[in-house]
Length: 311
Image (cartoon, rainbow, N blue to C red; front, side, top):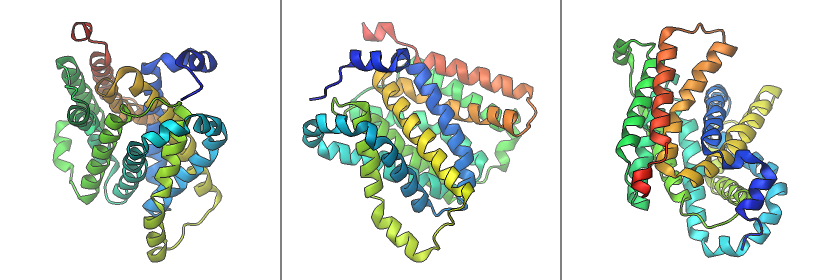
């Protein structure tokens, strides 16, 4: 039995905890930063090592804040231990290891395009696991957002599609998106425990199940160098795309459901391209504005409440 009610939790963390659109937008912002830092650091760390370090550090940071909630929720966690372990393996161990492995073989262009398959995988798993069908508005919104992503990435030139060369890295990334879609659906069946309890358990359990492949990887590949750049990068991916992003994502999905949350995946390349303009000096073009407009329109259409369906 958890000791923190939703009302008390909202009072403690302020109005932001009940703003799903803002929470999911922040998630996409943090994941956009992960795409940039992750592609850089993937060449410095073997994929399992990077994934293990990310979640181990995240677990160590969050456990002091989550401990009293874990103690209060221990009986509920024990009662649903099989689901909690499966969710941890799929959403923490498998997803990120596949993601970091794929970045060693594919390009940024391919990854950003394939990121748009997220809502499709969420819709498939939501139907299989939860029996929830995607509404017409959600389908239209997802398509509009996907089109906006394509406009941004292809620079408004559809001929760029001919230059895309799919490889094994792309298949691995599709596997990563499929696993995260299943994580999103299963997370709605999680027990009624505190958000920090859920976060700490999944981080710790996910890191634990990475130990066997980590031992094998370190036996066949050299250990990474822990210089200032690598340590800073691990710190970033452990805090922003991990702790903060998963807190926001889990809460957002819990508030509005899997299918309505899924279109926010499309904001990742939007934020990524905006970061490139601000931090890398890329010049803004008309296709940026068109793409942003399509993505935001699609997100609004797909994420809004369907009153008729609820009635």
